[in-house]
Length: 148
Image (cartoon, rainbow, N blue to C red; front, side, top):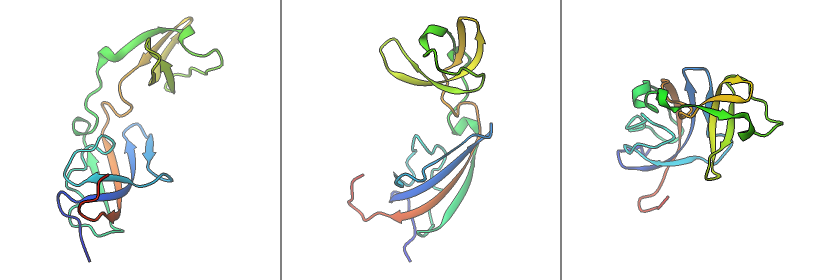
């Protein structure tokens, strides 16, 4: 049976569990394609952990914060006017919400504090400053020469 080697293109399903208890999964979406040994933005720290696995095999990897999404940056805590959020939007502390920037692009931010007409948000990436655990299941080793 064929096993994964460094540089192989593969399809995987994954589940990430963050230090704060939140989780993300690739299911029920299509499997994620990646090259083994090349860092992937959704699965930081995976590296060569799939080498030697056969299709159907799984690997669990603990990734420290520094190798996951990096440290949280305290300068990314910002104050915004309440008017930048829709009136119907619940702004509970700890909740992730969408915020439009001045160019009209959406960004996920975490509510840190609500003070009347001022909302304090954390614009760091969801996993910043947190270690994570990756559970990765190998679905398929793709034929050589196939482009993503």
